[in-house]
Image (tube, rainbow, N blue to C red; front, side):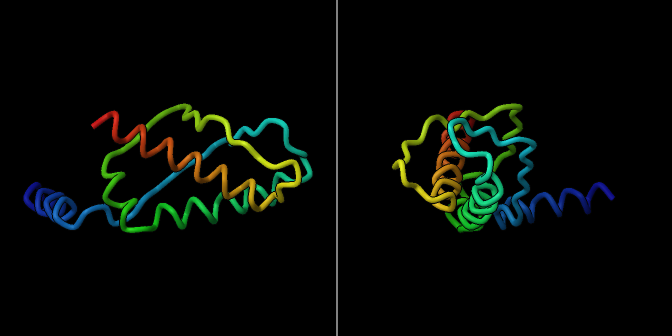
Length: 106
């Protein structure tokens, strides 16, 4: 059994990351209409999923990042920004924070 686990771990190291699991309990956005929250959330999820599924992501995020809070900072939006664009920009900010955190803690 130990040999099987060791072989599985070796295979993971050789093959890189095969899956990424992300759990977001709460995404806090200030200054946006509450009515747009679902559109923003859906756009965020689609964008972050696409970004995490690229091969570059799989190599740059090789370790676990287990943080209670990740501050993605501020984003600047045009006053007329559509909720879908807001979700995409938030996803890019979160992704950038994950990459910075991963690079720092290696």
